[in-house]
Figure 1: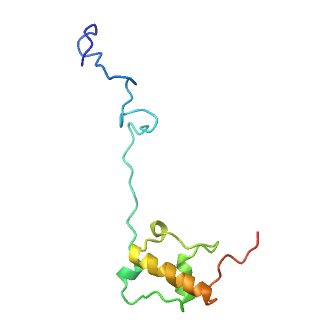
Figure 2: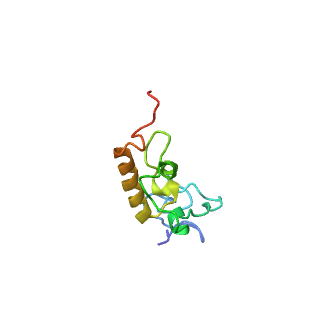
Length: 111
């Protein structure tokens, strides 16, 4: 819709809110005008899917420690790169290793 009073090529009615629209060039969330698009790093590959000889077992705490943070928490999938199926198995085996006292529940340091 055009304004009747505006000169030719100007005054396009953008409705309430002026120049800001959903996904426009500027605005509260759209401050990316003139920047290059985001580039994400290489996708992580599940080590258990890549190497079929590896298997998740509660009796190998040295392998399970790779998936535990220094505070003793289980590392999430998006950080470790493990697929959903193996992440579920990994969590189960870490919890079993904790119950059997092969691994600690938390870090050894007391804050």
